[in-house]
Length: 324
Image (cartoon, rainbow, N blue to C red; front, side):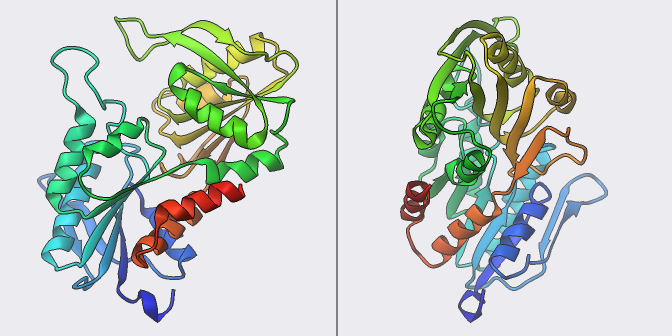
């Protein structure tokens, strides 16, 4: 990165080590050293091993598993940097935890995403960088600067290279909540759009039943787009609905592949030809053959550089998407 970046540190919690290292490599620097582990009584132990006084500190953390431990790691790393007199602390959170709980769905429930925001700010962070939030309204939970990076710059060129463009391809929203995302992709690729409407049974809100599929899929290549996969049933069932509606091929794209339980096997055995995802969540060691991982490190590196140089991240993203 050169002498102008000597006052920058990149640290990583245990949920984001490889991605943080990849970002550092893109920026031609290194990952700063820290101990992030546990004491013998299971309490989180954190120590930064480098001088951060007056520096611009970026702390990377993501939340594919052991979410409570990863949150405490993040908060304690922020506190350590603050007490070590860092000039500015930015938390880079590629996948924002508890983002499905951004409002009350039933009585006597917490708004968990807001609690995470409040505690992160209370720990002493100055800025947040995240990517493809489940609900954009989460940005309003923060009274500090927040950069919300889209997934379009990561995927558009991949889709073009695979020929998923034009009138022969239909972008499919697997539920009503994904319509805006699907519309953005369809507009950039010159494709049609379809929507799968579903309902969640009251007795188990994690299940979903298809009500109706709207859009012309007959003889088309389909591309399902969504923000995340947990158990995999939603996108696998959607793929089956798309094929039943007459599509010749179904692919899928999700930014955050949490892949809980038997999700990898479900995806591997499904009708999905290729599932495109990213490394916002560390990829599982044995992903099925139909999963392709695209790195977000170049995009995050550009955001880190802009923040460090006090340049507009929003302007950068506008330029990238427009070029796409």
